[in-house]
Image 1 (cartoon, chains in turn blue, red):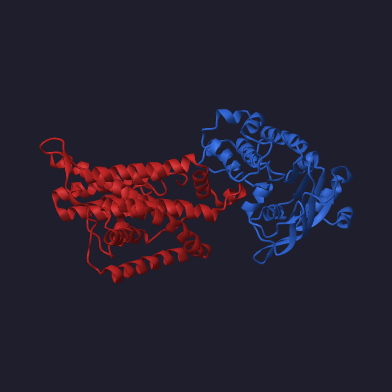
Image 2 (cartoon, rainbow over the protein chains, first blue to last red; image 1 turned 180 degrees about the vertical axis):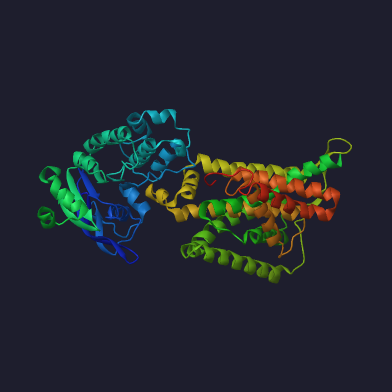
Length: 241
Length: 289
């Protein structure tokens, strides 16, 4: 069976800079794939390209067997490929409720509706009339995820959901992931917090300067390997020192 | 009593300014387009109305029903086929394109209709009024205009807050990329905003054409009033624009009490004063719309 989301030899340029260089990956339904890497490794660019916000210079993006490399970002949402962008990106002048309703705008019909989302995040019901800009970072992240879920994605991409969150808020956000996976969602997660990524991921990919430096299941990888791939330290040089 | 009459007149006129300016506010708030042809679009609506009357001989009041939809549709496609192309190549291009459009519209109107000023003739309605007391009277026409302005602004506001499309227009104004990530086709939503802008400015233009006489070159002077209303109220805030329009209207009529020339100068003095004291307008908004 072919994967839900496939990326083949994808390269992306920002002007002269090649931010992503020949990355290949696959995400199956009901699976969490985590991409780790240092700042500037090309993680966000990769996700944004899969979402359709950047045009790749080479390679293909295939969703459910269909080549969507040149499909607009809005059309990908309707197919069920949804990105929760870095920094939440809520609509600041809209209320919490309006932000959630925006998720329904071009979403697919499916199991997620307002009632189910409010059951997952009960506090949102009381605060739905507040402007989204008044929420804390963790609350904003929850709204951003809820907004994405309301579109009933088949594959959900999360770009640094832990960024700027307190440990408690981070635990809360990550506590909803298993429930999403059980529902058959494929999740592609970008995370700087390697320990967090190791905990939730079925498979891991490490990017280094736009290239794939390492991949495998967390259980198969040891810490030294990950460190080496993350920071780009050559194995030999490391043992020599 | 002259003062009371001037205040009433000023509020009526202010409603009209606000209706005229709300399209400017929308275009800037949603897609950061400063439409220099905004005034000329209003003038074009008057001339289209005049042509309709001379061809079909319908009563002038009916031109509202016929002309406004034409401009709504024209606004949508004008944005999609024309403005969007310039938007894709940068903000300066858009400014130049709307400036060019303004010149083209002015000259086409002058070529077709001559440079003479004309007005939409609505017969006796223009001068009839309700006498409140011996000194205070409410002209029908002004009441109709204020009513139209308030209702139109309320409809625009309701559309933006209560409908899914309107909500997404605001979302696009906040963060275009994030809106795309929930499935919004921003070009379509820009078109919707342009349609609202063109519809409201056509409505305002027709009202102005009944209130006063208009020539093909009147556009830019109305544009100045529109800008002043938008800036006084606070850029991108619809209710701020209504307040800004009221301030301008009051300044015009109260200034005219002193001297007719002062009436056309006072609005700009107020405008400068507001800019000096509150550079972000009376009702600045953190976010657009």
